[in-house]
Image (cartoon, rainbow, N blue to C red; front, top):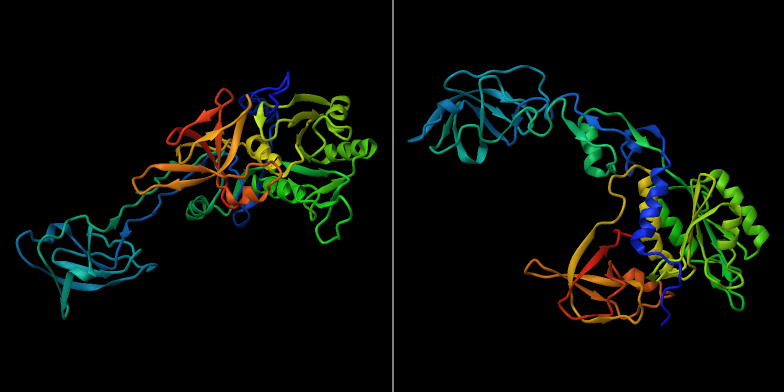
Length: 415
């Protein structure tokens, strides 16, 4: 199997160059309604304007009591002075020897510091009987115990998921400042490609890369410039490709292309990008995806991905996804790497880093295993569907035995 060509750079160097391009391009910000903030990236820290919870309240259904009234040796009898529900606007208070029936979330009445749950008491008319052993201070949520007023609740660079959306709502944020989504143009090249729904002619295949890469770009937070269509198909024609590239660069922060980056007669992109803009790198010492290309057209970053479907997906996840996330100001744009033990031996026959599709195997003893899938061909897209991880095999490694601890990249859920 062929080794990496002269001039090819390492995967780590390619990632570093991509992130350097992102660092030199500030995304800008915008303010969006909270109901449109899911998946967006916070542009600045969010400071709590009030305590959360804003008042001491009951964590359970039961009775609010004074801890000092509770006996440690026998039953405690308390007069039930009333009931307090969540949302009651009236103030309430209890004195010595009194208690108040209370529901979860209701404000703790003045004088009370403890809630005894209803399952642990008995009621005899208007008297509450509490058995010995109840702890003072139990079942109460103190004001500010989750987030105190003035505390940084969320940090710039965090992606707003469901939990963060809830925190923003709890703090009363109807609007939130987020980074602008990078605009991405996805171009799928190849005369052999036909859109799904159209009949295949001789030597033709349906275009899958355009859909996969556009979906990955959207998942990474990009706004697709060719919407409502996810991508644009481009013929293998130098004049057409030149025109489409220049038009896309006028609209997009990032251009993602599929195909046309190797060394064949119709691999037009490397020379065309060098003519129109600047090549940052071309070819990375990796498998699959060695001919990946990166450059710029003015302020637009151009990333040319190989046309083999698996190569396109892997190089997108390694290079384009971190680029798009970094352009949004995400603090840790690259996917975290895990460690797992091989469930079977693996081998490779080249001096490039390899990223093998695999399945994670959690074990009952708390350890993590990983099994490399048998089909690793760069045209086998279904293998990417089956996989949930990539096993990283370094450049200088040729064989790894069962049980060897390897670096693993977990694939995004639902990719």
